[in-house]
Image 1 (cartoon, rainbow, N blue to C red):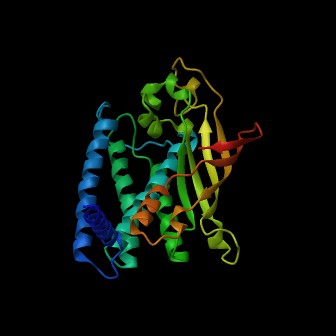
Image 2 (image 1 turned 90 degrees about the vertical axis):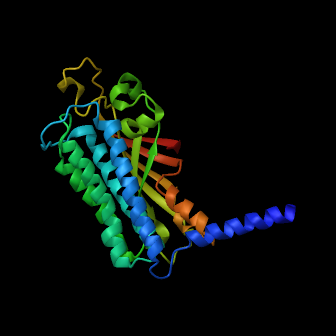
Image 3 (image 1 turned 90 degrees about the horizontal axis):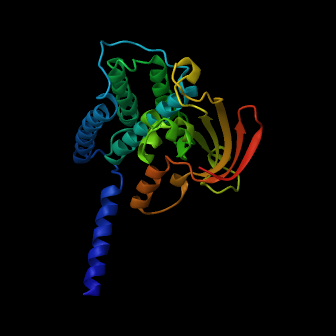
Length: 296
């Protein structure tokens, strides 16, 4: 009985590995699965986003809004990060189905830009927001970061990453910054940090550094209860000093960890969107440098 269970488990694992292994040539069934799955998930995501984000606000005729000075540009960093990884993952799915490199970059990498542009159209029809050209530029930046590295190096040497910690600001304005942890993860810009994580071995192939060793530069901001200064809104809110934060930290490129397992490579690719907790130097506005033994 034990032998049969082990054999069944091994067989199941082998099937998973075979399924996850990229195809050497175009696999029409896999390509169709990717296209249909992305279409269904995109539709569901847009409907869900509309219910979560827009349904409580009045609609309006399509209009533009210049929000480039909002949230100390943390929202723009989020747009670039999201577009990059949506495009990267879509490209990797097409690579798994054996689609040509050209089509991976054209249709895969462009997916993130198209999806975020659709969201921007929602903004354009919302009285609360508006279509932002600044957001579109940020979306294009994320797509360009992925495509340019594939064209120049055939690999991603610099990867955008994300980290988050809870802050006391959300408790003061939960309707905007989030009442629950999951909402704060998306809405509380005070706790978000966006990183550019660079793989040193890729730039110095003759060095003895581990292939997975990265150095990361981060950007964050604090003191924000509103998009702009609280005193400009007419709301009875504390007017905290708003300041930018810059970080220098260590990181790991999970995709550079050698393994023969397609399952592990897939998991490493998914979790390579997140910056690992590590010792970090912080430059906090004009208040000098602060060291964190562990920062996330």
